[in-house]
Image (cartoon, rainbow over all chains, first blue to last red):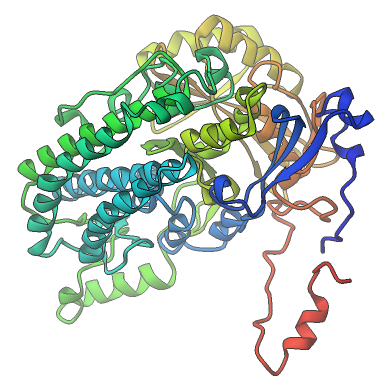
Length: 409
Length: 170
């Protein structure tokens, strides 16, 4: 296995300026253990005083080989790995993977399951943005934001616990529908959240949006142009803050997003403040979607009746021989998928969450590639931090909203 | 396949002699390794595919020719279309040209290809491993790389296993 080697400047010669080699500028490690890197991320900074000349991200500290592990599991069992990917967006990862499997083997999903998926994924988007708002507030010295945001996030995690039994690693969305129907308390819990949360967003905005200290730290910091963003493959709110109107929920509606009336916030400024404003507006848009989906939520089954791919409910196993056989076959052997590949993507809180899935005719995938938005969003950071102060680098990283589990996979 | 995609696929087929495979309304175009940079440039500049959504590879081991397919998933925001370009690469000294001059996002993803599949990237500006530590032997996502197993560490075998771990020791 790996031999540990001494790191020398020779490796980074082509990435730093001439002045670093003469010792005129300083090389400084930020991370891998640093509160502002939002995980185990190491940034090798070349500094001229306080000014960042070059920034070399070093990733892989959280690499867990999820892609390789998924190849060794059946399609159903591989799903639990996706929860561990981007741990701020567990429902979204489940949905992305499950949609890829459904597209590969062609399973239908009942309307009630589709609506439930939309509700939960939008709640997850709010929870993820809350963590972003709290931690980026913390990075900029607004300690109280963190406490307020985590108070609201708790409400969402309680809803997840209600439906799936787990707060974070839910695996609630399954191929062909969802695990089981939501309990009766679900409606009240979501309605309560819908009632309290709009006032909370107003409170956050009162604390931050017009706060002169906050604006000083954010406006004109970390400008990202439209062309750079596209070339670097940046997606999600970061791209929309640079003036590109691209949201997969609008452009390629899935799970019935076309039925809901919502806007996609787009700003042209491209700075840290614009990225903040886009996410704040997304809170309100997500709430609109959840409210409409709750009002429309149809009755009916929550799992497909296609027994070749979806296990039968527990109540049937005791009375039907076929159900018992299907149950046994699906959980021991799994279902075969065709020898073909598909790429399917959803809009996660951070951008395009794509799954490339290739089957080989058997019950295990030949290859799963997780196209994670944070990976590309981090790759653009070295370009936009050049010439800024170290303290601004913290603000920029916070505004990009990276999750290291998503980058390293 | 989407109606709007048909003329684009025809254009690529005519220009690069690409073969087409379709599955569930996705179009996969097979291009020769030496033409990939031209094909990507053509798709970006003349067909508005401005976003490289994903770049990855598939290992078809034990098949040797071609052993890998390198996959470029392109998205057009202006036209709302997707197309996949595949490049077959042989198992002995696998190699593709770098796409970093066309899409900056190819930089890190090609480093991932190099790291995970051992596919050499010709002309890459920064050919280092990206996820695995420097000095790792082998390429984990290759099919002939074992999945691996780590023996659980308990009190009775703690020291024995600890000795085998690659920690920095003083």
